[in-house]
Image (cartoon, rainbow, N blue to C red; front, side, top):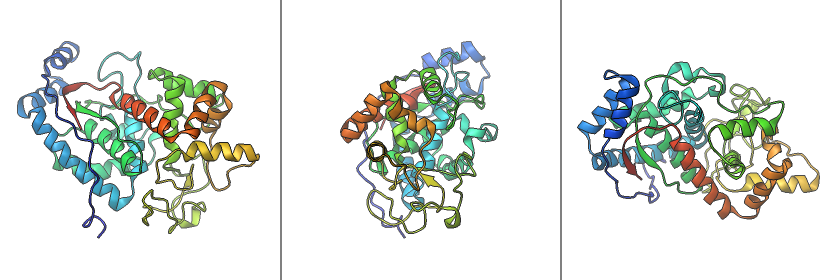
Length: 339
């Protein structure tokens, strides 16, 4: 099988940086009381495992995530899961866990049923046995690790991630995630991402992750294409080569992608859009939502859009920094581990 012969890439591991969790514990105790599930979880991590031991657990989890992605070609849905967990963050929302963010709350059925999260129960099912296998790695860490590894294995940048997150004891509130077809795309995109503390350049870099993935009518409802070959676009039918390494495989057929090679993380999202714009043509067989179009129609966004079209290196550098920032929003760390 593919997974039996799989040779993982050299991961971007760094030494664990052991710190104590007293600051987090004091904060949680003051905010939520001695019996808070978050406080109990923090105490368990602090008392039962060292940062070095946690690093070893994460390393094993990473290998299993790599094999999962290799066998199922599930890069996009794992990245979407990580984004949607972190994207609930509100810088005006107070402290952990009320502020939302990358805290594992998307594992709760209540949050998975939020409209913007349609289809993400599949990604949670993928990760559930791995989280159970590698206890006490938290859901918050497992979700963010999977998102970063998905980018890397699709040919994207290695993201300097930080781990040691606590899990939220409750789901996030609904309504903080972006909409693909808002009435005022520029205002909507800025409202959502400014709420999380991002600049225009970081917004363009982050949305550039649409270079991988697909939209489905059964999920966003914003396209006509759905599950299976009968409802696929020309680029999402079985047999089309879309992986960055040229190997066959795409997981489930169907849906509509932003880029022809939608399992390849590169700057084609920007390059192809500007080429088609110059020709005065639409992008047949590919999706382009109002929130994508505004990135090359709004003058401030366009400056960065053109930069990333010219230079994949610039895009990768900006994306890696912004993804790291996104992955830490709202997180409370029991200790610090870097992979």
